[in-house]
Length: 233
Image (tube, rainbow, N blue to C red; front, side):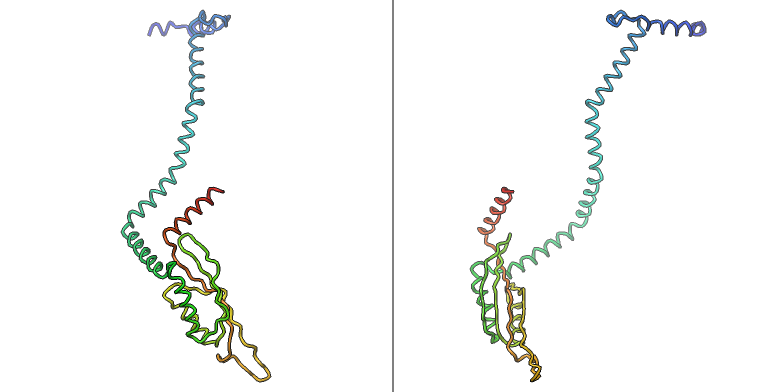
């Protein structure tokens, strides 16, 4: 305590500040202790600062990026947790969908059955007393897992016969859909009072589309064609 009381702060500060005067910048090793320690502290702080910006700043960027991922990861985790909780129900739905797809596939004819299906469509019209003026299969359109066969048709017959024919087509065991359907009605004779009563002949034009599944070789060809098209992009 006596030494602290005898300490002259003014003299100490004067001695400390005096050590920074008349320094030889060419001989830093000959400097008094105070400038040397101060220079060491400054150099150390500068080195740490440069190290922070050169090394740790990149790590901070990585840390910020990971923080940005956190909300998405939490959302993904919650979604997967919900799926895990509902896994039995999802499996049941998957089984139902697979069964439904199998039933639909059974309604698609194979390549060898297409001729028979075209004959069924033709026979459905003839069986209703319709006259085919046009029955022309078009270019087959290849899809990913099935092929689409358009058929341009034009038939002549009475109103009820045409209606029965369209119903027969929809009830075929294979999937057949009618598109761009148009029916030309007879001209009404206002002088004689002729009316459309279902006995006058009508002309129906439509495009019947039927579908067939692709065999494994055709599916493989479709995949190769898609891959080749992707490479060209």
